[in-house]
Structure formats: structure tokens, C-alpha cells
Length: 315
Image 1 (cartoon, rainbow, N blue to C red):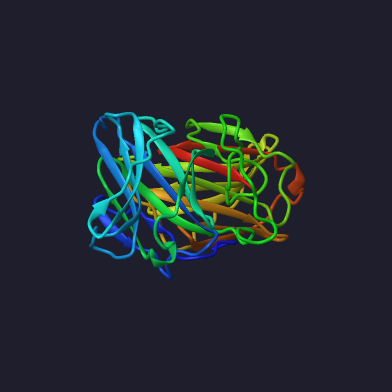
Image 2: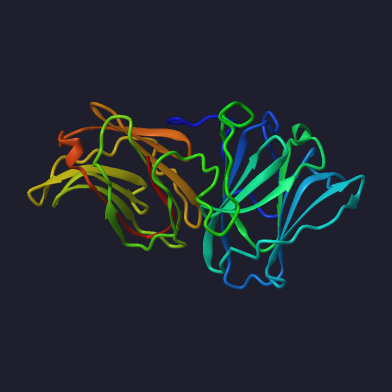
């Protein structure tokens, strides 16, 4: 939805569970895992890329996140037997924090990043094209698994990424500005360059356990070009514009409130010439015609209310 491609995202899978990767893994594919590490995590959580749902006899990439050893072990299991472990890189995951992990399929290896920073390369020990499932177990929560495709991988534009401590946010599927991870709520920040047709704002987070409401405001100075206001007690999402301190006519039509307490969400605002298109969890939710048309002056973003934010990305 709104520029996505590849298999459909998976939202809030149970842990433990195995999930099918529709169409399997391909060269250039990027698995984007959004999750949360509980404060009490003390043992091991596992991510497995493997050929078959329900079987751990073969695992092409086994990532064992070991909080008690302060490391992430990488390995491969073939015919029921693990090979040699790889442990470098430490443990760049914090307790009580969300994380984003990217696993990119390159010709000779998996490239991995955590929260926008290169973490490790892992050379292929088995044919990655056999992978058709991803498995999770342990002490973390998985909020979403999505899939991107980097069409430059393997071609003449094959990128070379530094792996030292000064490495940039490697092989991110997001062009341009870097995502902002774990911003506080309430959040207030700039939209550099303002809005224009084709620009998209992505907000990912988790609804609080007992929510009443939250809001996203796209700001034009002291005015609000779009006030997006999920209201849980009213089971609706209100949209409006505020100018000169006064709100206009509310818009409430739409498919109810596709948000749940304690559940992760992915919210996208796509700017079009005549209005905004809004998607929730990769499904179109509504459109909202521009009431303030000087889009380039819409240069502020606010988020407040009963949510925890894991990522804000403006592209």
C-alpha cells in the first residue's frame, strides 16, 4: 500500500510462531522486523529463516539473541546439526525499547542492521532461495514483519557498505532522510522542506494498554492542516483542520477503528495534489481533501496521546 511491494506485511505475530514468507526469499529482498524487548528480558530470543513452517531441522539463518551473554549468535543448521557460531557485534538491543532489524539478501551473504546501523554480515551456508518461513521464539514481542526489495543488489549498481564503527545506516530500504527511532510521546518535530505531492510520512508504534485517544497533527505554523484523531471510546477516527484556533467540520466516515490496545500499527500519510491518502496497517483507510493548500508551509509534525512510538520516517 502506497509504494510497498513484496509479500504482505505480518502484524503482531504470536511468539513463539512460524510465519510463511509468501513467494520465498529472493536476491535483494529485505526483511524488516519491528519488535519490542521487555524490561524483564534475561534469556534468549530467536529469529530463524528456514525452508519449512513447523520444522527446525534446517535453518539457513539462526539468530540467537542472548541477553544473558550480551551477544547475538548467528549460525546455520543443516540436517539437524548446527555449524560454527559467529558472535561478533555485541548486543545493540535495549531492554524496554523497540527495535528495527533489517536482514538483506545479498549474493554472498545476509547483511544485517539494527536501528539503522550496520550490525553484521553472515555468509550464506545454504541456498537462500529455499527459505519460505520465518520463526520467532523467546522473550521479545514482534510488532510487524515487512518485506522490501532492493533491485540494485546483484546488478551494476551493487552497493558497497563499510562495516566499521562509522558505517552509515546500511542498506536501508528508505531513501533520503533516516528514520527516527523511539521518539518520545508527546512528539513534536519538523518536516524538512514541507510537504509536496508524492511525499509520505510513516508513523509506527504501539497503542497503550487502556487507550482513550491519540492524535497526529500536520502543522502549518499554529494551524493544523490535518488533525488525525483515533478515539477508542467512540470507535472512530476523526479528521479535521484547525485555522485561527478553530476547528472546521469533522470527517468520521471510514471502516471504524482498526486499532487495538497493546497492538502495533503502521500509519502512512501520502500527499497527493488534492488531498491526503491515509493507510493503516497496509490497508487504505481514508482520503482527506486539502483545506490548507500551501503544502510547502506544512512543516511540523506532532504526535500525542495513548501510544508508544517506535519509528517516524518522512520520505
